[in-house]
Image (cartoon, rainbow, N blue to C red; front, side, top):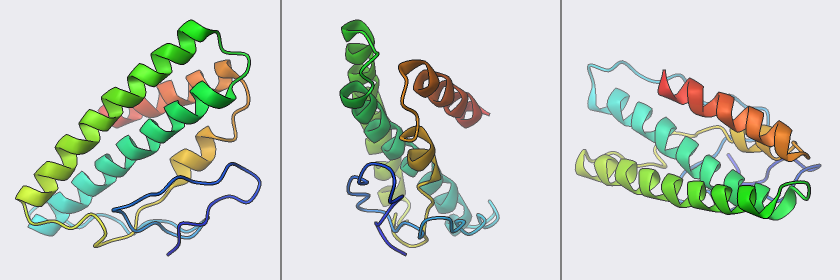
Length: 135
């Protein structure tokens, strides 16, 4: 496990308090929901997705040069919303005695989002990821 990410893309932000898989490595499958650990696995995955989205929105607001200021401002606002969601999920994990670093998670979402160079491509991919997260 490492925090080193995609050599051709931007340096990854700090993923603390999570343990991150090496690039290209898959995260372990979640355990069953009948156990506290299985619930923790799902909370961990959701929380890490929120962290990746927060950082990706911040990245896009800085790096997508074709985005208008209104869109950049909207992305910064969405990053703040992702920060709140992350906090709620981490608080729930603490309440359940689940350690975010107990099992590795994959930063594939970050890697994919930060390979996008246009505002349109970034928006399409993050919209798709958000929709998958609702299912």
